[in-house]
Image (cartoon, rainbow, N blue to C red; front, side, top):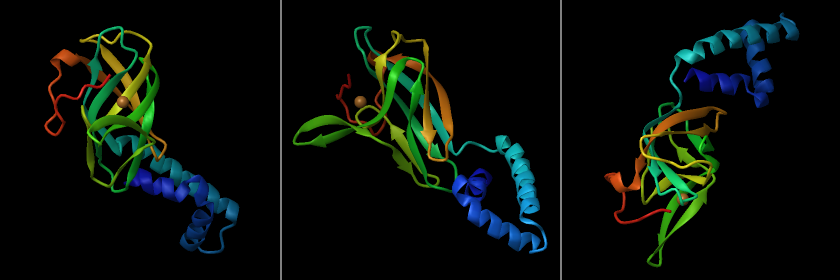
Length: 190
Ligand SMILES: [Cu+2]
């Protein structure tokens, strides 16, 4: 996508490539300063267009698990889709309802289920990944307010290209939760 090409061409570590490419494009008669100004103008033109393009990361079917108010932590579930033609690394962002947000995964071993924090998840171009009970989930840690069904909770995820995708998700009580198609049954997370 255009925004990724821009990042590659004009990124902080792309100075050398940028100048070489500009010289090749404009010939060697143009002073370096003029080339950089022209490149900057082009970059601004492209940046003005990028809001028209879709985000690389789409989040759908988002919901946050409602638990009794004595619980300090809860989890958010959703489906991620990488709509770009580049691999995207996704890391946890923040939430208006929790002090800390982490990506967790349930790990099965020796007849036990435990949670492991994941620094990031990786989505190939066009790939999707389901966060569902019994698998990946976004852990909302140290809740700053009660999470009641019918309310909305905001949370965000960050992508490796420096973008943050913000979602407003409905709270669905754990009592009304329906298991996702691929989720394991009977695994409670609290
Ligand atoms: Cu967890």
